[in-house]
Length: 254
Length: 316
Ligand SMILES: Nc1ncnc2c1ncn2[C@@H]1O[C@H](COP(=O)(O)OP(=O)(O)OP(=O)(O)O)[C@@H](O)[C@H]1O
Ligand SMILES: [Mg+2]
Image 1 (tube, rainbow over the protein chains, first blue to last red):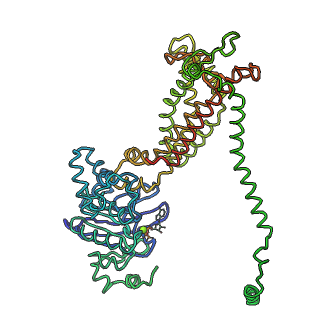
Image 2: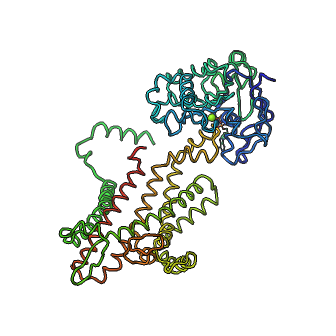
Image 3: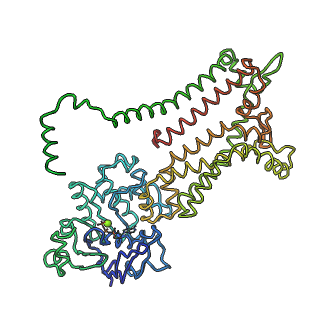
């Protein structure tokens, strides 16, 4: 049990009357990268977004079943949403740095969760550590007070990863984090994600088969709101169990 | 498309082209040109009107400005423009009147409109939101004379009773009335500014565990600050320019206010009240127009800076 980071049981989700997830049962192992693949509209983002409950901001989302993160059901009414989101960081498809300075972006989560405590010096340390970890420190150390939205997309996405690190999450959710980037940017961000392996449990949605294959240890294939197959990545790409999986991997779906 | 047609088109495309073909103008071309000219005239007419109005005011008032004693006008408070022997034209008290009323109005309107805008844009949803927006717009449409009437007939006795003062037509009355008047339009503009903040910022902050209030304070308000500042400046502009309500609620007595309960007189109200009684071309008449020029310049500057700030020319 201890090596399972995220466990969903009978997770179903509705957007109004439309059911987007059907009885999803998953055990996602701790400390590795799991990629989530499947054709457009199959519910990858929906599943990912229900793991830190960000789906709820829509107001018309209904959920059945449970999602346990490190043994704690995050849909339990007693659970503090804020703690859930502290434990579970999210990287979005389009880089979305806040319209603040680079410094304020990186320290944003830290300031929220530490209640502004901590001296200037500790904040600077945290800032540097986070930016170093995403390989951005040398590029931005001279302009920490300029706006984060002026960075290139690749740098913005790295910054969006960096700002999750100071609050020490256990799980990182990434929804097609490279899809807005050019090939060089993709490669750089992928490399970064690979480096974070082990320290964090990473669940990453991707449309890029090569990326899934290169960058993940386990792979989940979804179709029409259901999980079809969940196996180690090598097995899935070499000997897929289901015909649908094989068809998708070989590019016979959208 | 049948093969016939396409071959004809192709062949005519290749061979029969002359310079005339490129010159051909059909009805669409003329309609397009006509619309262009019409729109240009409409656009330019706004500028022409502004220049026209400014020229008119200047023409009536410049003679006074040329010969006036600047120090006397701006630093003394004696406004006796129709005195037979020794008329005096000090507008300091009038400026103080306008400034104090506008200042109080902003102190009333800013919290109201900011709070209202935050509620409508960030908290209310669905029906509540639509109803509130319509209400705010309705409030903005109440004519100023009605507000003045409220000042005279409701606020006046209320102030006299509550604070036990002899007159209720004073800075407090006019400031509150003007604040309530300016609040709806400020709310509307501030709400637009908040709505213009992309939702993905809110989503990003929420995903990091920010509460709704933290999102508003740390993300939305800073991101919308130019628009909010613009809203405040437009309110200030409105305050400077408002005439009727201010005329009715201030008490209209020339006075540098020492407290909220002093009656004052505003620049605008002075023009409105006195212009009808002066002889065209007299010194008094010209002085009133000079005040008009002054007001025009101030509101112009305020509105221009509001506009520039809203557009984010002043990067923050
Ligand atoms: N906010 C929403 N309201 C209503 N339906 C939605 C909403 N978001 C997603 N859906 C529907 O839920 C289904 C799953 O969407 P989701 O975004 O999870 O797919 P996805 O696998 O991430 O697709 P993509 O690869 O295109 O990102 C789709 O049919 C979509 O139309
Ligand atoms: Mg998606």
